[in-house]
Length: 215
Image 1 (cartoon, helix red, strand yellow):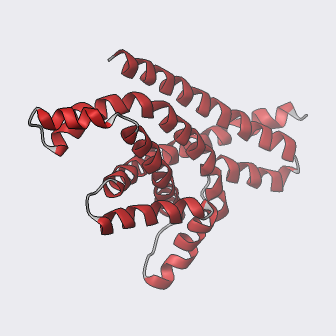
Image 2 (image 1 turned 45 degrees about the horizontal axis):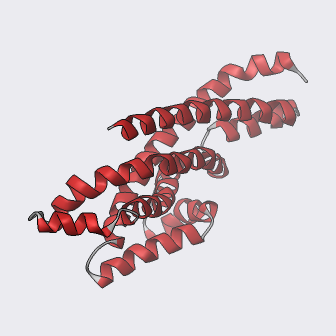
């Protein structure tokens, strides 16, 4: 193992890790937004809106994220969508993650006993008030850890954007392999940095879960 080479290229991998973190944050925010919209659609009282929500989840969970990225980045210009590689990565992965988050959040909400909602209506609360004041606080305790799993999957999925030339960890490793012919060292370095990022995120999720359980 060429330790000297790994130490030499380490600063460049750190820079790429910063882009991976930024990509993960932006994608997670977009994914959560899409997830909330997806849940609202899936739980709507209107059949057509429920159909749209179900179709969104089915399409984006039923097709590979890499294909979705390719359609958006390479196929987008054909229908007037011009995005650079980073923008396509954020939007493509974010919308894909939103489909998984939709089902995670919906599962937590529908697991709350229906009697809670009926009791809220008895007290004169509207559906929105019952959801906001009674259902969601209880569902939050159930959704933190599953959303943390979604976030871990999302961080690892950022490696896919290397296929459209976003200079994150995986792309950086591939680039240095081309000049050093040291695939083991380069991918090992990238893998260690991914593990560190995911470990930190995991600790944050554990802390948040404990806070939510206390409240």
